[in-house]
Image (tube, rainbow over all chains, first blue to last red):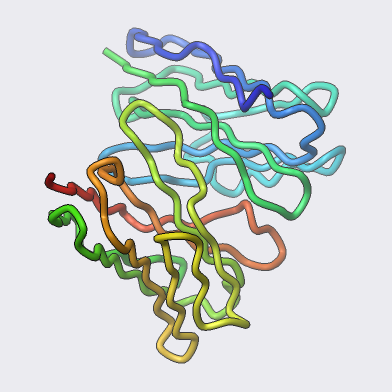
Length: 112
Length: 113
């Protein structure tokens, strides 16, 4: 069975450019999460989507970060005007409501 | 109050030995305490999890011990194997959203043959 799929797996971008990271959750999972993993900050929660409810954006580090989830399935995390401190692995996870979350392998972002 | 503190940062164990990783938390609203295992280049994978109504949970060679009064929990890996070499993260989350995890800083485990 397919797990959480993320693309691109690796992205190198220039400082100041915008990037989009995509997540395909496990089929049937209603909850979707984005986390960031960096050397200095460890694993941090960014945003949570559950069905048609308003997303929990409490972990987004700045207004340069946004995410959307279309049709209750695929999600896109957008980082505008990237900075070097945005370099990290961006992990997507999905879950049947209220249960274990399953992580994808991440999108490795390098801002140069 | 949102932090989860994990120790040690790194751990070297001989094959067949016991690996022990400890975590402490402050927020009494936390209700779900999972451990994740992560291999290089991969996403974290759930290893074992516990809720505060039990003091211990065992799955194969992996055991979580939970001390609610001390707000501490630990992972014990019995008969450690070289294939267990990975980074381990403890985490905690509230009952309202078990997927909204606060992670510890991670422990890099090396099991020597």
